[in-house]
Image (cartoon, rainbow, N blue to C red; front, side):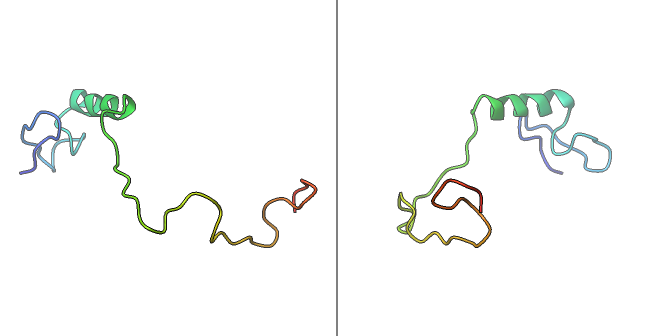
Length: 71
């Protein structure tokens, strides 16, 4: 049986409407952690992740022309 990621209590997949959490309380605790940036998704830099616009491709009909008009 899976466990709640907040309080580690057992969660019944068939009867619990707040899966993967055991209750609304734990669901809101988890939401609060995300909103307060308690959790984060790590960024792993790669060799091809460089600042600048190298390698970007302009698609016709998207963006702006040299005069600043949409085009």
